[in-house]
Image (cartoon, rainbow, N blue to C red):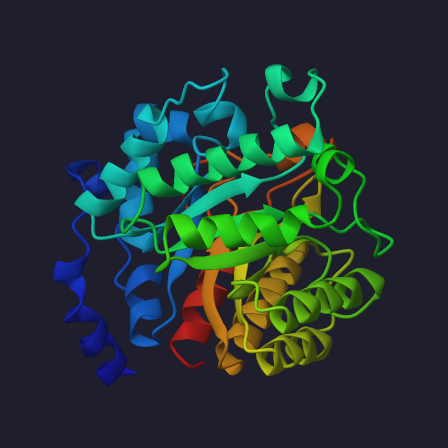
Length: 348
């Protein structure tokens, strides 16, 4: 254990946190997720609430201290960067990227093609397939091109498969047909040939119809030479419904057989409120199992939480009666789940 602490201590200069990181509500653990993950050579990430990053000094300090990868929650989505025809606004995304670069962090781009958060000018208009192809191609070229060489990986397409394992009926499917997935990856590759291009989805961490359908989609794309490089397993989980770790590992292995990397991209583990110590321990076990599974899979290349503090979480708004899904509580204090991740990364 002493050798581990010594090794972690040598990494401290790599984490340059703002002065607010010293404040009482935040605390300074001897070992951080960022330091522990660096020793295991696994990028550890969190999604970024852009408003919190701007307004909450404690939030920014803990983000820098604990994580090496940031995923913008909203600032790079279609309606944020392309709210009006032929006009783009990258200001919000640029600020996230500048913050990341200042603190030696990477940015995981999110998301180029999704069926939510699309502007009315796009969804309310009548398009021929040819014109809609032009719109989507130009959007991908502009967004990926704007960040070319500065964003290592992109969620290119998210949630194209529904819960029954069929192509999700979306604006993009109706307008362009199923080929829109392959086209998006091809255009993203053309815009930045060095970026890692990810297909991202939920509810497909282990086995089942949806997971099998995603595997078949990836198999088809790879067979056709489409430049898809990995699959993002969102891992929005709950203590009441947890994928079997062995099934998750088997899924990662079959994706590896296709030559694909795997990322945990949006992990949180919701609890039914109120919170109890027992529920927190159960939650910690889920985080522990998922990190162990990732570390055991050679193709698992990143582990990202969807947020990191219960102060800013999407769960209570979308799932009333549930919450407390992240590894820091609303006071920015570490929970058992945080300690579980540290222990796994430390080899315990």
